[in-house]
Length: 335
Image 1 (cartoon, rainbow, N blue to C red):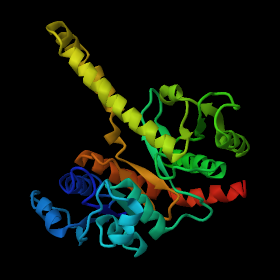
Image 2 (cartoon, rainbow, N blue to C red):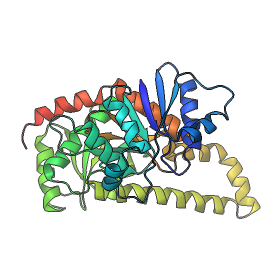
Image 3 (cartoon, rainbow, N blue to C red):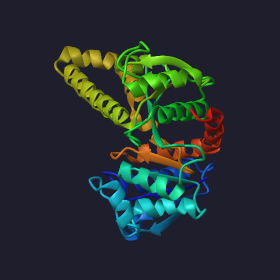
């Protein structure tokens, strides 16, 4: 697998991005044939110099510009043709790379991948598939922010793409699909979600019906479908809630000597809970629907998150997710 990495994207770039890539070239050596670090060559080489030895699999490709997190995605991609995001995607179109990874401006990654890689045959819109931890098996939320305005036909395709990813990468034999709504009854929701409900019922997917917010972490659903507006709000709310609970718990356990003793007793269980809630274990979210493997990592990604995002890129490529999406979308016909 050959992976192009936007070395300048993210809050801790290029330091954490480069470190994660170096780690991956060691820990995932059997799966990687080439890693391209794309961005300011001087800055990247400065980070690489911190390591005693660097894998010969790592190649630096210079890009003069960086797209900031606050920039308009479409405008920035159009004007900054020599940005690290654009140049990383270009390596797929030129045939030099099999996958692209960025922790930079999510909107810019979506725009660059959609314009340069194009959409897969039959796909109407791209979607970000994000893995969330639950009390049981992990949950795939789709879409987490790529397409904010969706028709029922688009949402139906999100259900299909999510099911393909869940089967191929998350190893769920027959993924259970739910539709995010404001009630479990099929009469609840907007006109779009009610029509989507009917389409999903007829789709042949293992559709359980509507799910609400309190259903997400029960571990009973494998894929939850929603538009990117709702999905992004859900994702950021979940992230902020997890951080808040962690901080509250730490404050409570350090409050007095008795609580500290309880913390020592529960240390093993607390570590297991922290690991289960840790989003860095999943590394990044795949942008499904584009003609190539595109992984979007969190803006605050550490070297560990980048390492796992590279692992996710390899898994997605090895399981031929895009090939199976094209097959399943073709079976739908015209909704």
